[in-house]
Image (cartoon, rainbow, N blue to C red; front, side, top):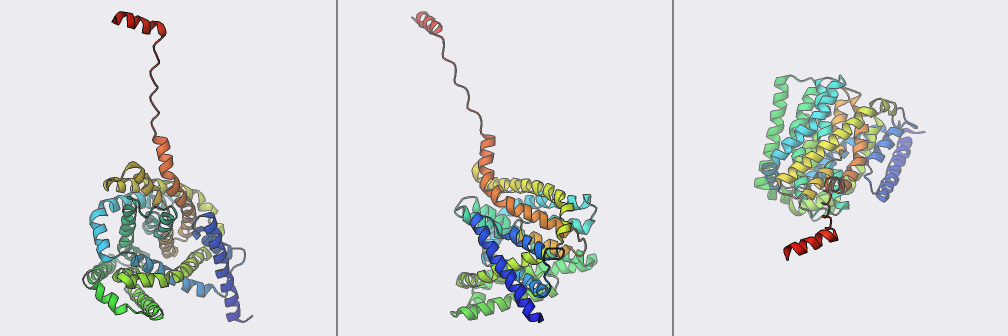
Length: 405
């Protein structure tokens, strides 16, 4: 069979299968991410029917999927919102980092994977899934709740922290010296600062330059600009994902809304391909040996995320029920955890299977935690009603009456 023909057949089968899996997940009410990962495991190396002709195309599609995920996330926020969130939520962001990065780092060191893998696994356990959490908030009708801005604030801080974390991790994985890593970090911070400054001061001009009444032109300009900036960022060792995120922040108003509507279907397609590609690169036989550590890590970091949300909501003056809801909503991990693990598999191959099992567990547990943490906490912390005083016997009441009279 001709190579192109084989690629089209494999690619069509994969995309059709993803559509069926996504529909099934929607009917059940869960995120489709675990099904996409399982599909990748089934058709990857060591799977049931390994893909061959379309693997290179899927790898490229996976890169585009990460870029679009971060672009669409950046389009949800303005530069002023990001600055405000940083000013008000940074103590909660610090608590989030300490509570949730530490378990991953400790686990990697206990497993004997070394300091570089410890930094990578710390990122895997630290970052919540913005995509899964946004979907859960919509599904549960909580977008207008008082605790929702607190949840979004934590997610924004995590996304901004990636602009610092990813260059550091990339430099460590590449074996760059301390001086080289410092230069990379300074370039990253300078780029982030410059983009935020331009977005704050001249965001309207940028949006006006990109704007177009023609949907086709708007799509081509925004997508082309994003891929260009992502490529330049990658060349500067900043991270293509962070570059795409910054493009999203720089656009605002009607342009951001229009671009989001046009690019959302593309994001969903290529994001699904990305999760499949990660599954393709993981041998299913490597998962059982790391299943117990993944389960222990999932339980530990689910609890630390609940504690993080509870603390952040308490700082914002949210009531007890809202604090538990905020904590439960933050449990899910997803796209960023997979991105970080994908970067680190070259240094420590075992981190890929562990991250896959870990994300599978928490993508399933996350929506359940968001729904049930608050009712369960209310039931467990409910104080038993005090017993009513026993009525006095008739004789005692009669004596009391006679004594009174």
